[in-house]
Length: 229
Image (cartoon, rainbow, N blue to C red; front, side):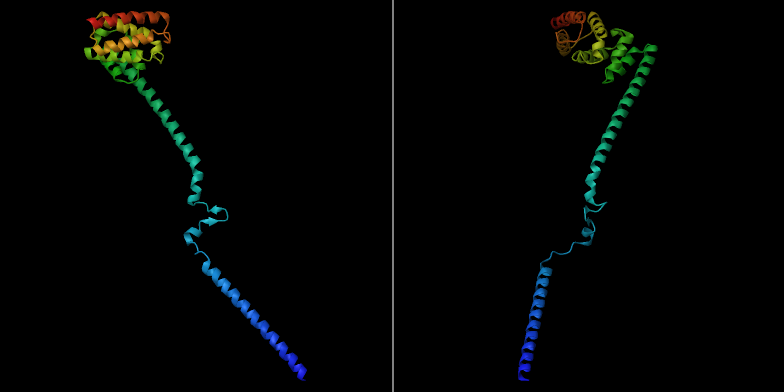
């Protein structure tokens, strides 16, 4: 009986030790979990957490906005193309309206008003077209209009290869000859600038024909003579 009691005591002691070890392990796990909880980052705000998914930001968030950039760029390019086309169309329509108005003035022999309108336009096509239509009529213009026209012709001669100047040298030279023969006043700066522009069109690099270059050289001599007058 005594032996059995001692075995029972030892069994009870073993059970107590095992219970104590299990309790200690449980306390350690609890302590570890508490430390992990205390060291974990704070939860994300609801509005931030709602934007996160398995593949990143959810659709509709600001993260999707860069994907719209090519569309915006394409749309901007398309708008620029349309605006450019509209500008060219408006310019063509405006030019046609101007030319119709100029022809009407010429039909009424109101040449001064016609030339004033085309001289005021920055585009040169209508001016050269009018010069071809009327021929040289220096005497129909007043002193101011003649002076402004000469300045425009100097500018055109400075870029002889540019359209439509390259196809209008006959009209330009004819007008200058008439202005010289009728004694139209050239300012000192106009004389110098016109000589320079005419010399430019006589060079080998000039797109003018040999006959046009020769005529330009003759004009250089006549305009240069104004320096001494």
